[in-house]
Image (cartoon, rainbow, N blue to C red; front, side, top):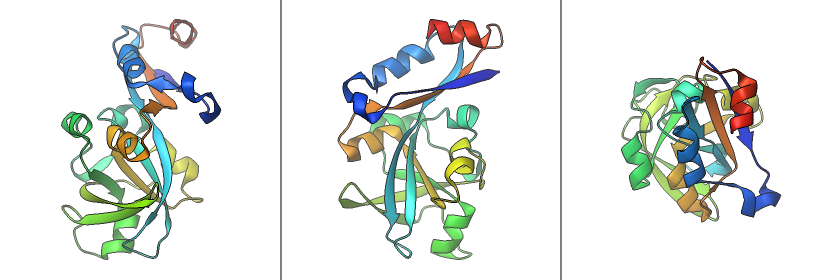
Length: 180
């Protein structure tokens, strides 16, 4: 399986991807899986107000951007539909906030878009497991994964600036990119 990341800049706001665009891409026969990636910078209020990258993802994040759940649950389709206030955090962030205690079911407060939002932790992900974490981990050590629809609601913006896509092995990258 091979893939690409489709992105549009914030200056092209009217031309950004919609949730419908995401669904159309997912339905193409040459697409193995696709996931939106929406990001916002916030602050962890439970700890020392350290910066956090809040990443809006969907249920396909493991297969597309390698978000590897090691304990608890991943972000599920039902979380996407209901815009649930749930999240996944990595073990390092968990230890900073909760010490050696099990974080599952506990709450984490994130200051985001001018207000504090409380999320229930449903899963623990492996550090540096995702493509996002390995690329921004040193700049923003805390990465919080939430349903992309929840982040859209909080941000008041229902557009998607990036979609990560894995292609089916039956097609070449060039053909898939041209079709998209």
